[in-house]
Amino acid sequence: MSPNDAYALLVSRTGYLPLPLSGEDYLELLPAVWRSVNDYGVRIDHRTYNCAELGPLRRRPSGVDAKGGLWEVHYDPYNLSHVWVRDARTGRWITAPWTHRHLVSAPFADFTWRRARELLVLRGMEDTDQAAVASVVEQLLDRAESGPDRRIAARTRAALEPARPPALALPTAPPDEPDDEDTSEGIGADTPSNVIPFGIFDAFTDGSRL
Image (cartoon, rainbow, N blue to C red; front, side):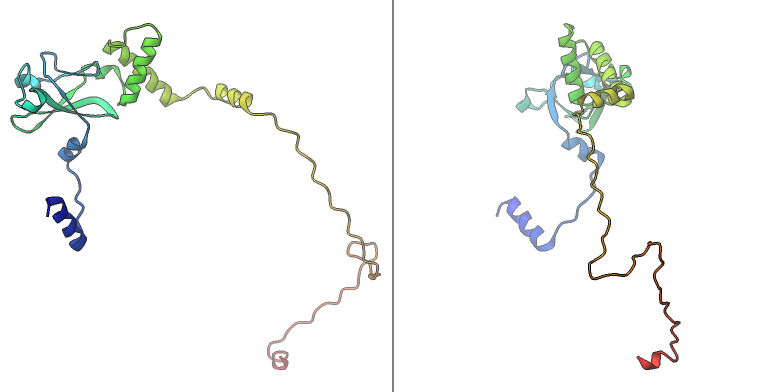
C-alpha cells in the first residue's frame, strides 16, 4: 500500500482528529513565488519589500538548486502590506513589509493593486511607480469605504427605474342582496332584528344532562 492508501484506510477505521493550524501552517498555505534578495529587498509585481533581517540573504543564493538559487516568498493576496521570506538556512520566516505601506491607510488586495495600475495606464501615467500606484489604491479604498453620495445614488435609481403603470383601483364588492326566500331584515337595517340571548351554563346542573 502507498502512504496515501494506508492513511485512507486508517481514517476509514478510526476517523481523524482535526487540529487547529498554527501561524506557520497558515504561512505554508499562502501562495508562493521565488525571488532574489537584492540590496533593495524583494520585488513582487513592482512592489518592494525590505527589512533589516534580510541583510544576511542579500545577493546570495538560497541553496535551492531546483529554483536557481532564488528565495521562497509567500504572500497574502488579500493583504499585500507584508510578505514572508523563508530563510533556507534556518527554515524560519522573515516578515518583510512593503516599503510604501505608509501611503495606504488600510490593507489592500491584489485585485485592488492591479486595478490601480490599470487606472494609471488609462490616465497615460507610469504604472510601475509605487508611490503613484499607492496613491490610486488609497483613493479606491476611500471610495469603497465612504460609498457614493446618497442623493446621487437616489437620482440614479430613479432614472434607471422603469415607468410603472398607475395602480388599478380594486373593484368593490356589490352589496349583499337578500335571498328570495329570506324575508327577514338584515343586520344594520332600520328595524333591529330580534336577538335571543343564551342562558348561563351551569356545570353542576346542566352538565348532568349532557
